[in-house]
Length: 546
Image (cartoon, rainbow, N blue to C red; front, side):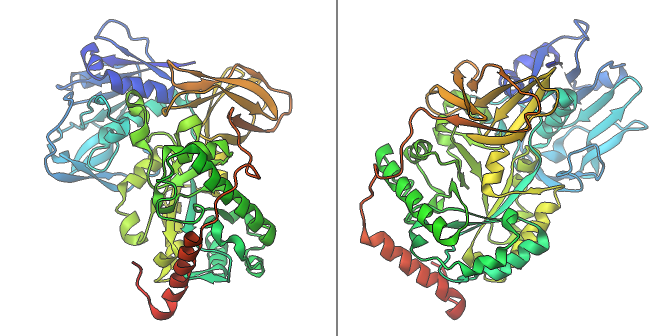
């Protein structure tokens, strides 16, 4: 059953209408503006109270009290918010210190016997838990504002401005519990761009040493190889990876690895030709090495266009990973939830997953607070390197794995594994609701479930009716323009169904061969060969990268 949370007083609810609209879409919950004494039959309460009068009353429901009802706060000086190491807060926050602008200006919270300090700033509590016999009450000193027109909710969960939304999301998750959306567990992958299979090493990258790191850390490492390099492949070094297939994978890094080959793809037909050629090259490479290559793209230099995404959709690529999300293409009125979910479902629900380029783990990752907020939102951790980043030794990969594991229990998966586990579920009696964040997912249907309903949010472009394939059977998958989601009718579940394969089938499909011949060009091959010579010379003559 959908939970209902009261917001007191009603005037504070009205000035934060977009904020609560966004949270309703995310958490399967209703917010109702209400004044004191009108009704108390809520599952929880959000209270804005400048004088802390509410703390002197008996509250017969779980509540969170904002002691500062202002919509904004002067930035002031930068302060550190220090989180305690108790089990009442998310694992990724425990024992960490994060930056908040104006933290020193927060109103002081009075402490009563039995109160638990969850976070403090400059030695003063700014977020506390006040348990009682009747209910549990959180008190937060940070003010929370409205989400402005054209702004993302995610803009309130960034370095320098995060505490109020963290506390509110934490509270809503407690209220919704098992009745709300259950997001996937923490998943992770380490990507290395550029290596090919012409020899047992590529610049500072060595297959044998990477196999040892995989064995030691039980982490998953993915190689993003350039399809044009597939003309030569040595198979013998795959013996180093014997028995480690679950922790090693290969995906695609462009086609010719030209700097702007995805960004300057300004026609869908041109994109189809280029990306079909990449698939043909990868198919030949697969046969040479006898190892599965995932139909997932890493765009060269992290840039791509709308047309290249649509071309990948037509060619049945599973997804794309990039350090840059296509937020500028998002429908303006739907910007609210951009960059919130574990993937951006772009045109036709084609998924783009964020990854982080790292060149110095100890300095860059630990200072990258945005990474912690992504974990708080249940986004996958995808760290990426180039071979030149391994100059000081491959131990940097072990450090990245150790740091990732410090955030809590981590499920290490390939790029394909992350995409195929990109879904959330919620229960409603014997009905299972599945929210897809990828075009293809695998999951096990729990016993007792009689039917499922599948949905997928979309915020980019016009919605086109698709087919939902559920274990090979086709069902209508139509868009709801008012809710900005695709949704299916109830699908009956057979007894002892076990793991199911759910995928979206786009109405336009293009075969890779022979309909899309690509024009042969000398320059891309020459450029790639020169780049490979440079990369292989780096460890020998200490050649600097330019």
